[in-house]
Length: 517
Ligand code: CLF
Ligand code: SF4
Image (cartoon, rainbow, N blue to C red; front, top):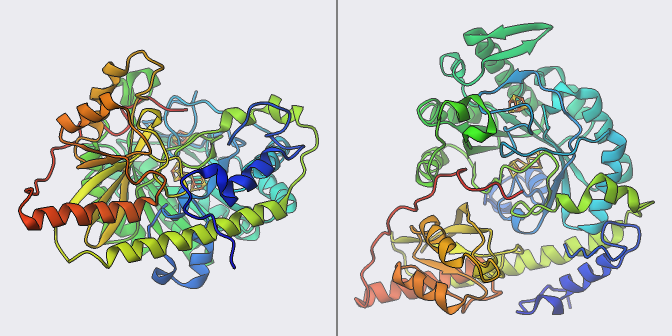
């Protein structure tokens, strides 16, 4: 009989919980010592790609939407310098190409970073990917970046290596990237037309010379596209990040999408500009707005026919740790790592955990397929918001949710289409009545919200706003539950009990929420 994580409602009872308890008791890692520790992607599966590509993406939380429910990444902030200037970046903070502006990470040496990776990998067995994403540009700091990869490849060979770059120096390092077995590279490409690029990049520093205006944008674009072509030729899986800047490159990103697809990019991640005056960026100070949730989704939908779109990016910080929707970086600060002494790397426990996750993933797919067989074909689709802490299950209380995952559901299945960060509803008895309207506005385009539990007051208010609060699928798989809910909804529509009406727009500006980390 195979081991399984099972479908038990009580997480503490299943094998995964037991294994995590064992890890939490493991001495010499970040969870020991009574410190009170607990704990792109495409939704495509193995049938949609070559086996060797699936092998590279299946446990990468950014390259596979499905994997992001189960697997975590960590970043080490070893790359402080940058060789360009973006108008959405303030150099006091992390690289905004993969981070929310206004976030500062603790900078590390490669040796400190390697020790941190071992500590995190021992405490979080689902951490499968180590990324270098700043706080400047990974390839503007090549010695530190590749020294870090070298150390980690020796001590934790099962961890996948990933880096993110603005692309200016990329063509010079493709051979090195390949030699260090870095399987995943992200290039931030915001334009393929220097006329557009001059409004995003005031200058670059290239071959010991500073370039400005259209010359800077032209060189940057040529280097980015050349780097992408070289990575494709070298067999390195490449994701392209683009920051959507309304009025500057929003329509142009359709051209960017075509250009990167034709050069072999695996995945395109269009992220919202996050812009506020307090970040001190050029765009923040001149009032440049970010896109709304609807504008972002519309553009992602438009580009989807061209290639796989990543919709689950959380614009994480340069020292992020954990599942994409959570940030455990505060548990692994330098002083805490120093206090741990020698860290033991427990590869066997990591493998055991990951085997259990694989079984859970197979169960999830089987449950989804079974639910789908019970629905007749229709064009009707609805959105549902889901409160989850991971594992692909509805396992978060309404009041504890920092974000809701949004699924579009129809007779074709349930598809993750984004997430909405919200202010915490449960404030310990204070301020709930102020928070609820903002939560309702954030998910106002959804027909239902799936939660593990919900109190009477928010339940009533959600119902009054036309959003169905659903807790009967508590701790069940998200996709299976969403499909079953849709089946019930569609049956009522067919019977004439209710009329299907698309809901209004959510009133949320992507990126305008409070940075969670
Ligand atoms: Fe980090 Fe980036 Fe690698 Fe992922 S993040 S270097 S590909 S391991 Fe992921 Fe974070 Fe979005 Fe980046 S959610 S900001 S896409
Ligand atoms: Fe800032 Fe990153 Fe742009 Fe450099 S590449 S200017 S660190 S956002």
